[in-house]
Amino acid sequence: MTVFNNYDQRSSDILLAQSDQRNTRNVFSGPGNIEGRDSFSAIGQISSLVITVPDSDFNITNAFKVILTGEWNLSVRNGSVTNFDVNFLASPMDGRGTHVHQISNFKPYDNDTPIRLSEDNSVVIHETADIKINGVIIWDQADISISISKDKIFNIDPDDRDTENHFGDQQV
Image (tube, rainbow, N blue to C red; front, side):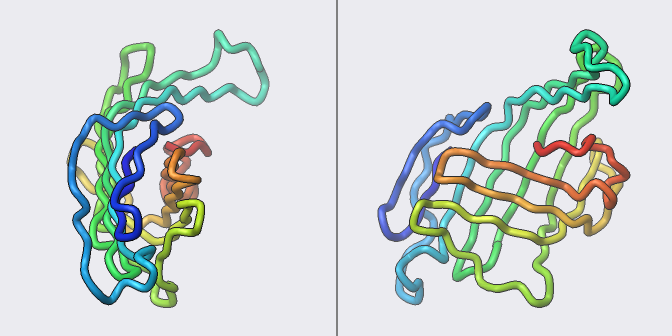
């Protein structure tokens, strides 16, 4: 993942199960940013394996496995999300039901406080977004949380109730 901000210009690290293969510049600069932590951009790739083990059987052989591949980007300016887009392919290992997810139209809650990176480059954002499958909105304005932990780990956590447990109580 690469995080661009106003106070140190660039901090680049590999995320757990994700990697950055882009070279871009700081997109936010100028006055009005208190300490430069309320305006930043982060981008990365999704490359994960999701394993769902049935409650009745902890045998990994019987677990449902899905490979996730794709990319995401997040832009925050003056404490508000200006862009958040996620596109990833979900490929069940049995070869059936491959589909593409798109997450966009990220909207703040009415009482949202300004978004700011912490001193260790961490942030958690709770808002709503539209979640599409193969280009069709399936869940309109589903609750979703995204987090960056210490400039190294990025998580997307769609609300299980809002998404009819489609993501199996797991983060992307």
